[in-house]
Amino acid sequence: MRRTRSTDRSTPGTAPRAAARSTARAVGSYVRSAPGTYIWLAVLFLTTVAMHHMSPEFEKEFLLQRSTNIHELSRNPVRVLVASAFWTDGGTWLSYAVLYTLFHATAERRLGTARWLAVAAGAHVMATLISEGVLALAIRHGAAPTSSVNTLDVGVSYALAGVVAVLTYWVPSPWRYAYLLIVAAVYGLPLLTGRTFTDLGHFTAVLIGLACYPLTRSAVRPAPRGRTVRRSRKP
Image 1: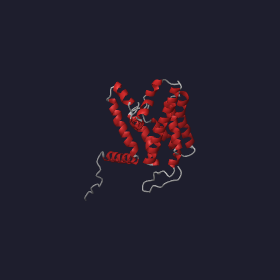
Image 2: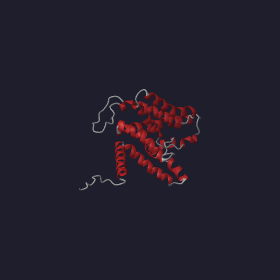
Image 3: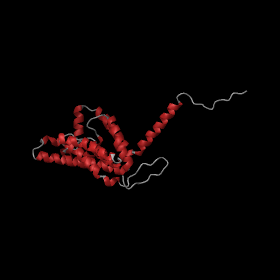
């Protein structure tokens, strides 16, 4: 009597490799669904690495030239508004990777790249101009030192605050109001206690994000696999 050979040719380690390939495909698919977010994050990785190779003195001078302070805004407003969005003022790159994945990537997938970028750029630019304008008035009236015109002000936090706020419109009720309350507390309490121009900028960015509700109408909705993407009139 012949013995039949088993058709199962799997070898030890095949299942983990298959799981790893499946995970890699899922991650790649998610990254491709939010290209703007991850291109921006990749640039931040490169600039963060570059900063780690600078001396403290050179880094300070280098960032000041890309800072959206009053002095640089009066000389090269467009250049510094763009450049400041690609440098960080502290924190690890991994923390930005987590925040970008949670908020920016989610917003880009919901809004589409163009509308997401409009929210992020609008919050970054308008919050910067408003907060620096208030600081200029404070300097003029003696409420802030004249040295504040050269304050170091780079980073991506205003854009992030605006995107965090616009995501309010995708949180289902009644959790939407709890989410909005948390956002207001995170960005509003520092303004009440610290009252710095940066705190004002963050809170302004939140208001700008909330004002972007018209951009959420007819925004792209992620569809289940195998189905076409439909557009919804309301978030």
